[in-house]
Length: 381
Image (cartoon, rainbow, N blue to C red; front, side):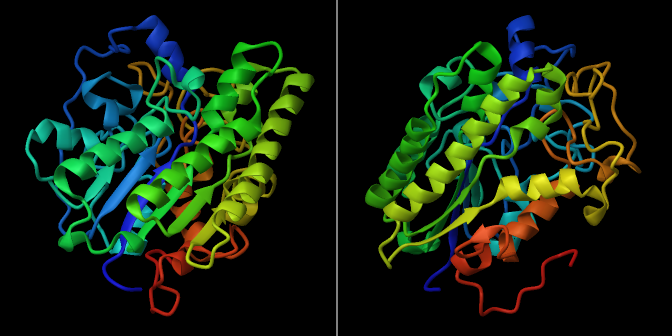
């Protein structure tokens, strides 16, 4: 691959039910703590460049200065030196992908650190626009987070200001864009209404618009898009107690979205100058839930979260009275809280996307990154 690889990671997955409940109950964002900890903006020494777009699954502390979120409190981040705003006990999928593609041992830096520096040079070589509460549609993201379009706009404005694509970060064509978005839109729809009016084709259309903008404005050539996960298996959805009809409707929306996404992305990127991959996130989670023993997981805890309240511990993680879980049992769970994964599962997902052809097609991330001919042993393999 010519030049130094620049990785732009766009990923919008889903935010917690806790996030929305906390906003309603605590508009000032206190969430049971007297002070929201200030997160440190750290400089990465080894990454060439990494950019992340997304919501809570890949949020690395974007909203730290806007709202004190549960992810800023223990037991989130308990495998790290301090709480970082990540909705996990440790690192996220972007952190691992950065390590695999860029050789970056440091964690991804939130975009808000750039804003806080108040200068024209970004402090480091990684950058994340991901924010909890974000979705594709304005109606879904109103009052909770920036849409995908809003985040792409922030990126375009920042690049115009400080020229991210300069000689140090090599050519625009060497950028790898990874995208996952839309689940929050469907969760909002299914939870707040008795009947669904959301059209998966319209959601996918917005995703394709974002891809096209990156292609046209920044010369994007490499794309990997993550499917929406099997939302019916998430503890927060199980704990909602949706009736069979509503669960069936949710399944239909997810299936239609994933099929439409694969078709439209293939059509948009069919020219040979583009290289793309569909990351089959839903297939991996389905297999983990249905055959937990194959992944070293506990069949008795597969439907439950590790940290939280309620029959499935799907809410309340990050408050003063959270029901956490011990370090020795965390790796038995798929979910750390009601909707987000443990560091262990994030690591497994990143590894599957990187080199497994069953869960990434028509190419895996290693191939998209142009490293298929390079000897590269993943940590932990």
